[in-house]
Length: 180
Image 1 (cartoon, rainbow, N blue to C red):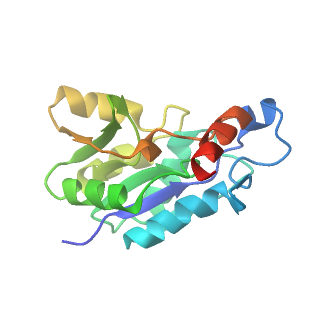
Image 2: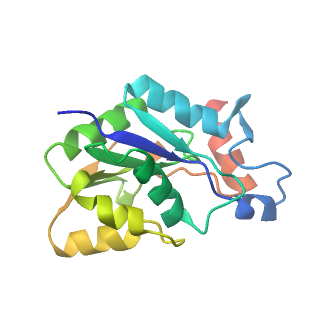
């Protein structure tokens, strides 16, 4: 079976990051001398999975629209791992584990110590729902509905990178401590 495509979401405005005092976009902010987005892209490349970056930084109407853009651009994929570009600590092995779990489950949600994280894996079955998204909630409603149908596989991971996102300068500084 073909590997799912990792959709790296890099289209947001990053307003919370600016509101926290930043002078640059959060994905361009340096973490250990490297932009946040580059950390994410390196992890995806190291995982050996196909990927697509959604980049229109002039912004979209929300995460749902960004997901829809990425899924539409890769419509022939067997599935997708939706990965926000602000998770610089994500580990390649975690991406591989979610991709493998997606081979036997229609929807996979990783969690770390009881907290749900990313990337969330969607099989081709969710294509129509994913491309219909257009709001800030992203795919949360799809996951909620799939849970009601018993279609969600919860995947415990030992990777804090699934929950460590960069939304504010304080987040960036907290994550930077792991590199010291």
